Amino acid sequence: MPSVIRSTPKKRKSPDLQNPLARGPQSQHPKHAGKGKTLPTETGRKGGAQTHGDQQVTRFTYRVFWSTEDECYVGSCAEFPSLSHLDDSMDGAVHGIRDLVADVVNELRREKSPIPSPIAAKRFSGAFKVRIPPMIHQRLAVEAAEQGVSLNRLVSAKLSA
Image (tube, rainbow, N blue to C red; front, top):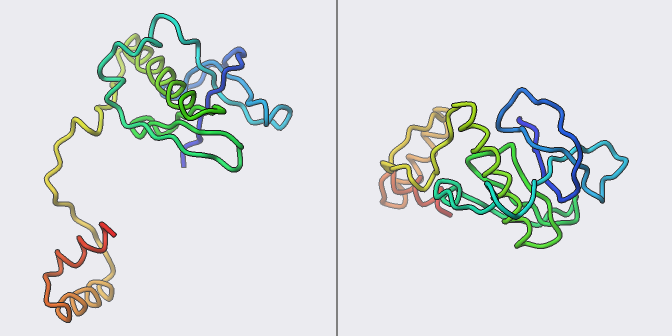
């Protein structure tokens, strides 16, 4: 499981990390000071990548949620699962993660490394293959027959619930 990289407003020098998706200035979240949890920081709100003029950056999939452990909001990006940004406000968390993603995208461009495509830009067929144990397959087939629906419809309903 990849480690989570988080960003906070407090700045500190960055070690040179091997993973370009994980690069960024480092800092410690104030609630974890002295506890050894190192977190990357955003580089500021003005100019450069922080303006979000890049449409690709604004089309990535962002989420903000409350972390009981960190006692703050966490902004994350599905296309860059190793990145996150901690903030005391929801708005700060979403702006922080967008700034961090913009910085990483700019770094990937400088290095001529591949940049993930936004999930929203991908086309989905609606079909995918899932391998399950034969006994579960049999149990689902029986359940579908008892309900008078296809196995596909039963599984689709279970997945969407």
